[in-house]
Image (cartoon, rainbow, N blue to C red; front, side, top):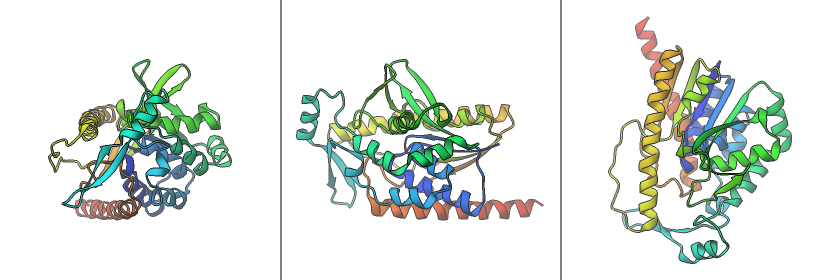
Length: 304
């Protein structure tokens, strides 16, 4: 059985989409299992349906308003050309006055998911033989949970996809089945182990970070940049642990792992959704996967 695993990474999911497009359309990989975390959860349903162009259109046309019903930050352009986020005091205050536990809300993303994945498509997937699994973090029970399309109805599964992407405290904290849930990346950024436990013997893993750290973060300029830096640090630790565990489990079960990292640093803030850059990242993901497989084929031919 072959599995596709896509890590979390916010707007960098566009790169993962390009890699997956090459693997599916050019390499003709037919996956039995799809496991995604956060932005990976947004991609996998349409990849399983082989509707790559449809999800590509979504990823290359979204902006901040597509995600946030109440965006808690402003985007500031820096002198050297980069961007950073700064707190939007009015939006945050308004959210707190409404009784919210988070700085912002992402209900627009929930609506976008419903518009993108139709009930007909959901039923087609559920009736098929592919397993589509999203990762969520159960904060109440302090555990990671994996939600398969086989186990839920349409509305519930859309909720799990949305929950998997909710990067708190900037996005919505969701209470479901009596528990509080958030972004799956807080517990399992790269769910390789889950794919293998579900029977995968070959796993293509798309990781939305560089294999080696190429940069040092700039000093925090405000509370929001401090929070994002702190979250990035913690998620980086989770990601590395997931990869180590995944390699260990794969070694014990004779599973083959194929890794696809980003070759360069795409962005230092994946909460910023720039549709022009995301279109470029999708194309660069496709070209990267193409070049990587050409190089692998050359190595194999030399060995024989």
